[in-house]
Amino acid sequence: MATVVAILTPIPEAVATVAPLATPTAPDFPIGQFLLNLVLVCGALAGLGWLANRLGKGRLAASLGVGVRRDIIRIEDRLPVDPQRALLVVSVEGQRWLVGMGPNGFDRIGAVGEPAALAPQSGPGSFADILEQQQEDPES
Image (cartoon, rainbow, N blue to C red; front, side, top):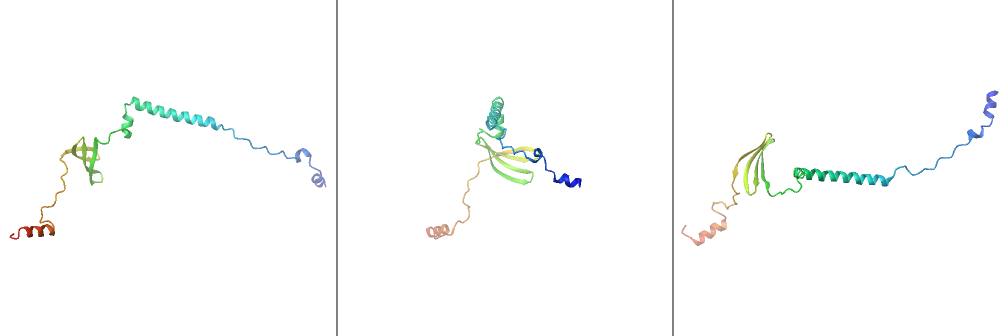
């Protein structure tokens, strides 16, 4: 009977009242401070890159291919010999070289002349040319 009495007794009001939920507040994250820090870090990185390029006398830019004249050295043709080796025709300030490229580096094989212009074959020619020759010189 004691258990029934304990169940039927009213719950004290302090336990029965539920505390109201707290209202949500703005996150404690200052977006302005974040953007300022981001701009400062990006500026510092750009400044360090400029300083490294300035002190390195352009070696960084040259290794990245920035500001390098592309008309001094050109690879005109490449012929793969096997998966690891190839022959290259390289033009350096107007001179052409045949260069061998392999896993151990490059080897200059020799100088190459200008590419020959495609000349018509020295054969008999087209039917119209032969017919015209026969009409001009019927004795041959």
